[in-house]
Amino acid sequence: MIGWWLIPLAAGVSLLLTAALRRYALNKQIIDVPNARSSHSVPTPRGGGVGIVLTFLGCLALLGAFDWVPGQALLAIGGAGALVAVIGFMDDHGHIAARWRLLGHFAAAAWMLFWLDGLAPLQVFGYTLNLHWFGYIVAAFYSVWMLNLYNFMDGIDGIASVEAITACLGMALLSVLAGAPDLTTLPLLLAGATAGFLFWNFPPAKIFMGDAGSGFLGIVLAGLSLQAAWHSSQLFWSWLILLGVFVVDATFTLIRRLVRGDKVYEAHRSHAYQFASRHYGRHLPVTLAVAALNLLWLLPVALCVLLLGLDGVSGLIIAYVPLVLLAVRWRAGELEH
Image (cartoon, rainbow, N blue to C red; front, top):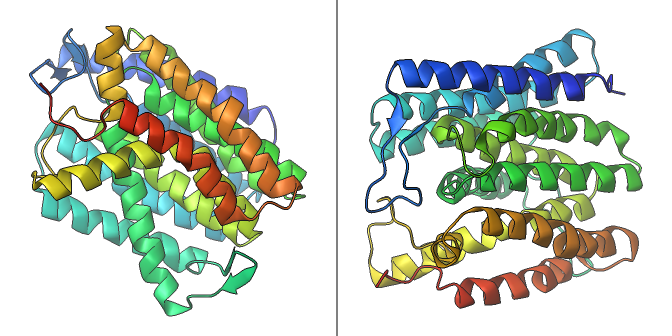
């Protein structure tokens, strides 16, 4: 089991690193200046998510040195996360063409899936679905979508951090209840590292996460869910349930923009959470609403999947239906008027 002292240590180190990165960004004028597609109104330094990256990867090295976590998981998640973070960092400091970013993302996914042995057989409506080699392809697209949707959803203060923290804490609880305490280590460390950054990113944010941090969180969360799937299908479906706010808003918005013929790789502010933040005139109510949805709605549904025998796909549908209705209510994917 993990040395529990690593979790507050991760939070403290991340907090200090983010403070240093904020000073660096201010000195180097690495500033996010508001424009017509922004959800903020004050110039704010960016790139603070690197604090999460460095803290988490440093903890992985420590875990590996003490043999507290299987080496395959460290290589898979650490390697993929590091590659995605480097790509995001380079894009934060100088634009990288979308096709090259995407190629790098698939390379990271391929590395991760090599060490995780692809997609585990999943229970779907009582049947075992084993995709064999095709599972690698499905899991690769799933991983790349997860990291990109996390980037899309990192648009208002605190939302990406709150999503990661609540999902990771919820899954740590579910892993213990599922008899898999070894699966709590990495989610708890990620929650700790993200909490240190959230101190600086909580509304009103003093620094933004940037592509390096958001993409890193997305690929790591995808890797943790794929790792959990090898223990039980219920844990995999639970990960998807707990990440439902981001999955539904990003996917619903993307589909509507594709149907309309928009250039989906261009920046926009038509996600449901962005419409909601403009409606309320600030970010805090929306960020807190995400936390409430995760803890008061999605976590109980995931508990039903794990403890009461609710089919995982059925639980996913039950969890997502209200989120889709919220996406419709908040005009996800519509054009701004």
